[in-house]
Amino acid sequence: MGATRYIRRMTVQLAIVGAGNMAEAITRGILRAGLIPPDQIRAADPAEPRRKLFQTELGIAATDDNRHAVQGARIVLLSVKPYQARDVLTHLGAAMDPGALLVSIAAGISSRFIEETLGHSHPWRVVRTMPNTPMLVGSGMAAIAPGRNATPADLDTARSLFQAAATVIQVDESKIDAVTAISGSGPAYFFFLVEQLIAAGIELGLSPADAATLAKQTAFGSSRMMLESPDAPATLRAKVTTPNGTTHAAITHLEKCDWPAITRQAVHAAARRSRELGL
Image (cartoon, rainbow, N blue to C red; front, side, top):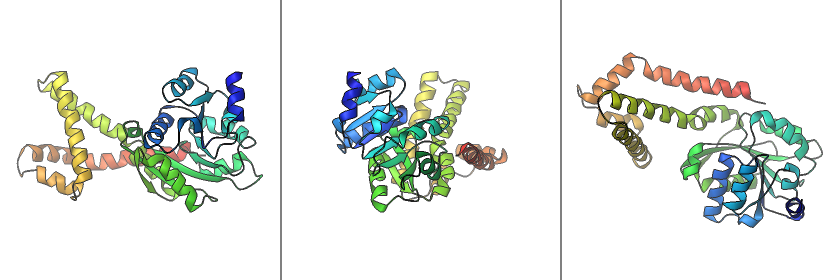
């Protein structure tokens, strides 16, 4: 009870509703950049281990009561699972400061749904975002999209929360499903490719450790080349692909198996599922 009473009295810059892995990544980026001190952040999560992590590792006050967490907060970061959003938002509206900005990373939850579920007492300012898990290592990607009432200053605020650990772009909210399919789900596509490279290396006689080192470092180096080179990915690929050489043999096989189309179809499938899950 003592901790809850303390949280209730505090006025803070940022309240985090849902202290999961992504919220942790965002928070670590904020703290590394010195954007907000830990005593100006509070977190809420039903899981005791997550609260303990925020308290002991990040120095942030934590509670299991969402309403206590958001009281007096200038910014509220909504980081809950889609199926939890309706219940959480229904109870937040009465507790949030009317002037607070809500920044949502809840997948599939539209800004209009958030605004309406918080209540109609006044126009809520919402910025919807889609970050990805490489934020955990400071190399993430995030897209931000303004809700109906969000201002340019609100977008700048949201951008600042993410850019400490991610590259940030602004899109129309109608494009968030595409963002989800490319960068939100995208890390899994690359992990899956590296899995197959490792498996192929083992089949060719490499040890699991050597195959993993070769595949992971190749993925890392190739990603860095794409980011730092002025050349397009297709140009970089062509520079590696000597006619009738080993790379040409692999690319030709992938094309015969319709790998380019399969890849695009997979991304479209992710986007469709994002739309289906949306509120």
